[in-house]
Length: 585
Image (cartoon, rainbow, N blue to C red; front, top):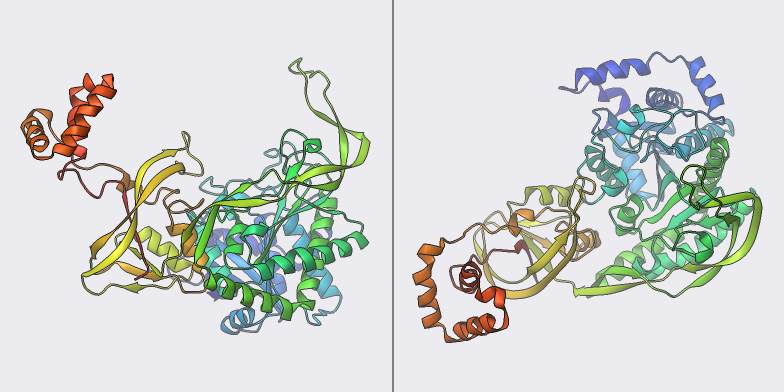
């Protein structure tokens, strides 16, 4: 990692990046001040303006340091700004790992820039107030994560959003939604984020967003981690201490903090439900490492200045709470790490139950007039008819499946793309030095189904059935052994167990193992098939029963030969066998 002032001197740095860098330098200090005065209005900085301002405060304040941490898909670097750090990079990141740290991620969807402005205003206020840290945590801010989306600036891609005048685009330079990329890591952005995240090991993580959906009275909503996937210590700290406290603090600032309005059906009157923060999402990824994680969602139809003010106040009270509860946060995270190490089962496939609570909700009456466009009934929220009433809140998930946690996984050394991702996420492993025979358990896939259309660059496997096979297998030199007894255990389990919701199997990393490589020619295999049936009476009995039970099978010579082939020693044993094995011996 390099301080920003040194980054652009790196050998081989693309010349077009140097050219864009020169754009940053044209903004005088006076223009920066002028821009700052606009950040409370209906405008948000361009990417060059944003980085120029962060460079300026980096130069002027020793307590603020800006670092270029790595590539984005666009070609420009992704930065992190650290406040209350040290004066050189090594000490800064050592301090962040040693002390309580909050990481704020802005503009993962560049058309949702509220966090960009909110962070700038918070920093400016802190500077004006004389940099009163007084026990505050180390504060790390990613000014804008989706660099490509920031550079793709427009004023029309978010048709339902009330300001600002111009903003970035949801997709990045690869047209990926970066908030679905934290496990599969298709983007350079995600790889750089992993570097930032594990360099800091943040105790608290916030991802800033703007919502889309129903209309209601709230400006400020939030998503917190799924309770059932949290260790008890962090669950208690988040839901019994943190949320009640910051809700009261925000109320004093005239904000009602309300859970994210994820509709159960068409309108809020039918209820809302807790969001399932899978590890593909930023906050779900952070939660894998026992960071207290939030997504802040301001409401799209509220004015941009209003949304920015709400986001700023949310960050402010969360920063203050984090500073006051450092010891409790660190203790709870330590207990959580220990809790996971004591578990012998890993639960997954969490499904929302029908168990419900009720919440007092401030909404607008729904109406269904005829559409001027279609002539059919349409939904309309009447903002002249506000209401307060209790609505159902479905906030309980139950894990439908679980698996015994092995002592270690063994992964084929040829799986370079998976190994690279494990390495990026601080997973340690040993490389097998010579061919070794081990007793292992493996998943033999029976069937799977995939999305019919690509989803974020993948044909995600949404259904699978499998059986377990235990056998002795010889592993080659270069294969790797991954112990599960390590701090980042849950990342290992969530990616290497095929059935988990965001496993590398589901994201197509092992698709080459799902294709049959050897086949037979019918005219040659005929004699061999007859010999197999003569030598294997049980198979012949099953074969004859199939012909009686299935007329289509009886009328198809190819199907009959295929049946015999698949049940013979000639059929490849590696078919539908993934190169990921488990062992506890």
